[in-house]
Length: 239
Ligand SMILES: N[C@@H](CCC(=O)N[C@@H](CS)C(=O)NCC(=O)O)C(=O)O
View 1 (tube, helix red, strand yellow):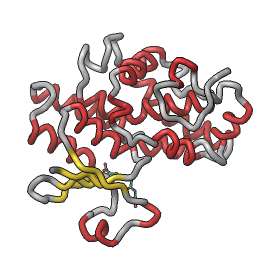
View 2: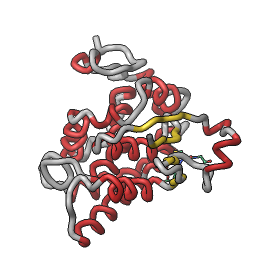
View 3: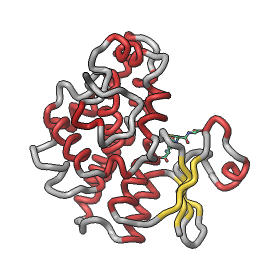
């Protein structure tokens, strides 16, 4: 069985897990701590980063773009595409993945000024998507594509931040909000993270920083009642 080497909070890992989940590919997973990488990981990983995917032939794959392409080549793409459409899908996927670390940096900001200046650059990605979306369920139509899978980590994290702090990264982007809801309702966001993701994520991104101060000052720092039953969360249910 293929094996994914992961870190619980990593958006690049979440993208790969979503690609595996959407194709229903069984896989084993092993989590490591990036602050204390084991020697065996250094031995196998050319760039020292997760995700690493170990194929059924024991080939070590790295770089999430390459892994997602491999999954398409090996297990058949979720749709058949012309070369042009494939290139466009890769380009739109890149518009998301190049902002993963920007979003992580934004969420980690210690103060308002840093948060706002970092968010400005992240918001440009959402603005670009807002302009491109046509009001269909997903990015290109009624079914999930690789572009949706690439954007899923950004949209999932924006959702948890909104529920945890009251700050809505998508406040000015109604079509992106709708897309976020469709992806959440598809169940794929939660299939692409470990069971304790919200707890681990909130511990890292909603503690001792600017977003945590919003959470403490903001009555919205709680989970909407309708979602309390379905989500593992460290947040309380709204009154
Ligand atoms: N370009 C890589 C980026 C992966 C990446 O940045 N992974 C982070 C965790 S989210 C990591 O392993 N960081 C540890 C390090 O750089 O030492 C990919 O697409 O797979």
